[in-house]
Amino acid sequence: MSILGTLADGLFIAIQVLIGGTSAYLAILALFGLRHKKETIQNSPQKTFAVIVAAHNEAEVIEPLIDNLKKMDYPNELYDIYVICDNCTDNTAEIVRRAGAIACERFDDTKRGKGYAIEWMLERLWEREKQYDAIVMFDADNLAATDFLSHMNEKLLKGARVIQGYLDTKNPYDSWISISYAISYYFTNRMWQLPRYNLGLANALGGTGICIDTPLLKEMGWGAHSLTEDVEFTARCVERGIYPTWAHDAIVYDEKPNTLKASWKQRMRWMQGHFDCASRYLWPLLVKSIKTRNLAMLDAALYLFQPMRLLMILLISIILYLQLVMPSWWAVTDIQEKLFPTEFWTVVSILIYGQLPLAMILERAPWRAYLGLIFYPIFLITWFPITVIAFFTKKNKTWSHTAHTRSIRLEEMSH
Image (cartoon, rainbow, N blue to C red; front, side):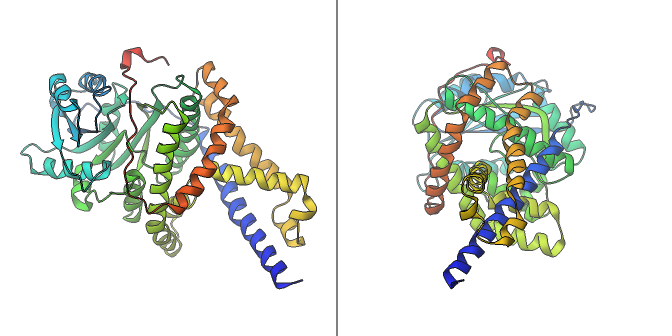
């Protein structure tokens, strides 16, 4: 066999081992999300919260969120609402004050982006006479279940230091794009976050619906300035042995883009930020996980390694197709056949694809949501070019704002 042929064989084997092993791990791990025990609130309100909302020109959506937050099923004296009016050129700050929240205006052309805005806000909170037990973060387009703070209070009293709430969709039926997001989040919540919570692994922060213990924030600082500040702060926590946990019953409703153009722009920022964080934190976490034999760190490293699980699904499908349609070309060596036969890829594919409708069933998704499965494969395919382009543009640090226009109130939500 020629040197070129040997290198090709080695490459194919490496691809099968890498994708096959990772995919099997994720498929098996997801099975631990089949069980969910609803968590009851046992403790009375004790913890105090500074609820901060990052907002850039959010006049269309900010008032319903403030109205929602003021109606939390939690004593008003135990939490305050701060809105970061970040480089706003509209009347966001005026609406915030009129709605009864504290508007904190920030103008900085050199440090743009949500990560910098949060750090700026935290520095000012630390200087205030009134201090809080924890910081809760929302985006301006969000709505939150009225028992959200009660669940965070419960988690903090049980020793949690970093908590991620359940991310639901505020506008699932606006378009085929928004319902595709909703399906993705049904899967993420049930088959990604819940299994890790059940197994005691580190959960991933999702950008909003986050609660962080104040002493921890003061100790380690925010320090997350990438395009995906949530991914970066998660990695920094895990690196320190602090594992974010999950609150499956603390629900946050997030507005999703309605058009492919807006979705492309948002997901491109997500992937660029994810690749940037992976380049800085993957190897340190991986090496430390091996040295300490720490599964939680290894799992967090795997999350950084695969920028988007949907790309993995696409690669699985390609490999399965090659083995079924062109087995003589794909099986270039006997070793490969012994490594991962066609039956292996078939089983893994069934487990991966089957988790989407299964997650929807377990989460009791409305019947209308299942219609989105018709268009979901198209949404899935669009991840491939986004991920490839993002890999080569991961050094981009320019924050791209997602415009929000769906001014929905919590009582108008259809479940």
